[in-house]
Image 1 (tube, protein in one colour):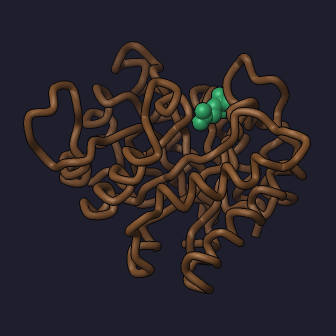
Image 2 (spheres, protein in one colour):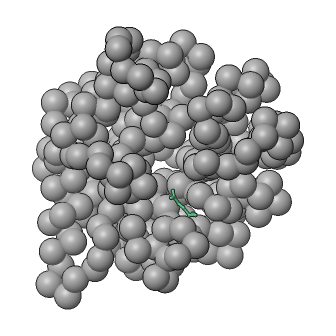
Length: 255
Ligand code: PGA
């Protein structure tokens, strides 16, 4: 639902032990399951997914995945299929994260993953974002190009299963150049809406838009208030239940 804020925690390749993962998830769920205005999704590493899924107790705090393959089964060593994820009742799958694009995932592959995820009934969290911000504004064309390529073949009726996360590569992770400003995020949020409206007309407006990249307890509220986004994709700060809890509380307060 667009009116609820969507806060997704991308745990990347942390934590190492399942015990640790369970403790953190239970801690987060304790708060998240009480929040009326927030949908929380935790995306742990694959090996922890089914254990954490067993700890899910309602719809307010669910489990997602960080990636999925383009077919539902087959000879694909090392891959996990979207149907496997949906049969575990995972709600979301992140697709096209910049850390995966950096190891060779092309726009064409991202598009196939988007289509496969939707077909399997999972909400796809499509990540887009530029590596650098140039003076001439070419990054705007780059981002709308990424969206157009990734959504190729996605029908209007499928849009309820699509979320777009703007994650400028230069603002992600501990080596981030600088955090994006709320204006940086606002500019691109408007661009994403414009691109969706060019592609789908007003039906494109059902797609929630997230911001991600160095989100923490200090800036979460500002991004939600000032950047016209429907939620956040949080990396590092989602691993700390206390900090993540503060982010969730910021989102809860916004009506
Ligand atoms: P970060 O990562 O919050 O640690 O910058 C965000 C992401 O990569 O999704």
